[in-house]
Image (cartoon, rainbow, N blue to C red; front, side, top):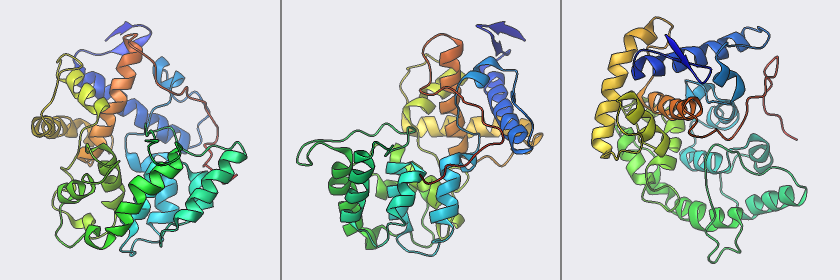
Length: 300
């Protein structure tokens, strides 16, 4: 083990990824057990905010699962609610909007305008979603209501997940819609919907994933390729699955052997952030602010 820029560097890139996974999960467990901060000796993990190893453990995902997904698991239009949840991605706003089935665009726009007028936060910071001002008045909420949510709601009957549908098939259907294309945002909705039937029984539940810019860079780092080397999606997914098989025995030792491919994808994205800090290539968006005990997002 050697050190560079005050961070641990292990013998191989795979070992470095495993260090991030194991230590990030250890932080979560120490906090949950009530241990006082700091929860790690890793200087980067102490200083900067990173998502959890399992997406289901992240704060916003936990809120969505507890307040929308779980109570409405049998709603055939739950997928639409998950789209609204991820495009807003801020529990305080989602609480005020309320479960959005049936869809009421006027309520959505009214809530967003009122929060904006009060100087309150509207959106979470996890996803970079910009408004297309053409024909929408230039604000993000109007753009989303007109260009993203309305077409999806009108197509809801044919978009509902069906028995024996794969995650890849559902992702492909979502990705045809404006704002969900490119695979990343559609896959975020799939990551929520895979925990309820019928997608809970999809045969590719463990193996499905779609790449984002961070996870492509992260896998490049793990495979010792140039960080911005291009990927064909099929080849990226093949290498991701191979990586999962490689590291699963080590993850079994700490109770993480069941990580599915979407969680591995997420870890690669966060690992890329970690490496950018370690190598002085950039900084994450948010510093880590320890709270003890951990607090949930509450409605304002």
